[in-house]
Every structure is written in structure tokens, then in C-alpha cells.
Length: 192
Image (cartoon, rainbow, N blue to C red; front, side, top):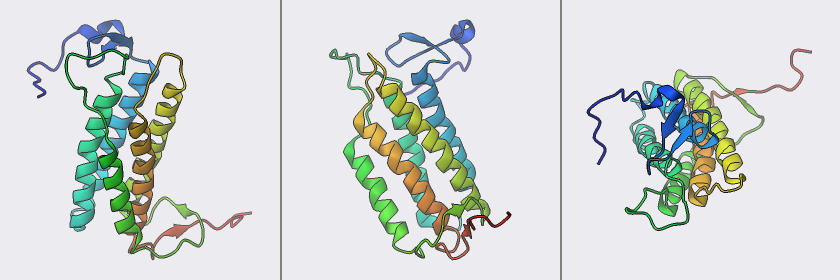
């Protein structure tokens, strides 16, 4: 259980931040960038939810995803050091990946087929969901880069979840645009 009695600790004043196990890393560390960008994704999803209240099923999916984003951040903030920890670290699990895939399939079943690439926009909800999608893709790129570094381990299920997250946000952005009927489509070379 998380308990935050004091918001400022002054421990980060030296430009470092603590991981879950207590070791400290520079605030520009790639692991910190990765889970910070998941946090940013979560915040943008929160902004999108200001415009999804009239879509109860989608809003419930987004709320679950916001909770999963905290799980994902905790996973990234607890590197696998290859030793047995004193406690069971919180990890993204395959069931969370399966759930988001089910949500994607549910929303995608209602969509008009794509005839072109989609420009971010349409409704306010769609525009915010597209923004969340791009931030989620950046988080995924950071996670993959982190996993490629010597000595760094990233949970493969976490990477799969991040990949599905941006897919979900794309489908959701289309879904709130009247099931894709009011998507703004790219017209190649339109302004030449």
C-alpha cells in the first residue's frame, strides 16, 4: 500500500530520484524517462476522459488503462536485478495484455474500414486520444531502448502492453469519431 504523508522530501534536489528498491538514478536516466513518459500518457488519457463521459464503456476501459499505467510505471521503477527480492514486485502480466486486446477487438468491431491514414482530430475526445497515442508510442520506444541497454531488463509483458496501449488509443480515437465515420482522413499531396 502506498502512503504519502509528505510530498516533498528534498532527496531529489541533487538531480537523482529513487527507484522502488531504493537505489538512486539521475533524473535523466532512460528508465526514469520511460516510466515518466508512461505517467505522461496517463495524464493525457485523463484529459481525454473529460470528453468520454457520454461513452460509458469506453470511459470504463480508459479508467482500467489508467490504473494499468500505474502498474506499468511500478514495473519499470522496479528493475529486475536478477536476485530474489524481499517482496513480490508489481509486474505487468499477460492477462493485462489480453484484456487490452479484448477491448481493442470490441471497439474495432464497430469501426468503418480505413481508406487512408487518419489525421488526429474530429472530436475533442478523439484529438486527446490521438495525443495520448503518440505519447504512449514514445514511452514504448524508450522502453525498447532501455531493454536493449547492457545490464537493463524490461519485463517483456510490459513492452507488449505498451505496444497494445497505443493500438488501443488509435482505435478508441476512431471509435469516438462516430465509429470512424467522422475521422479526418489524410489526402496525400492535397496542398501541393
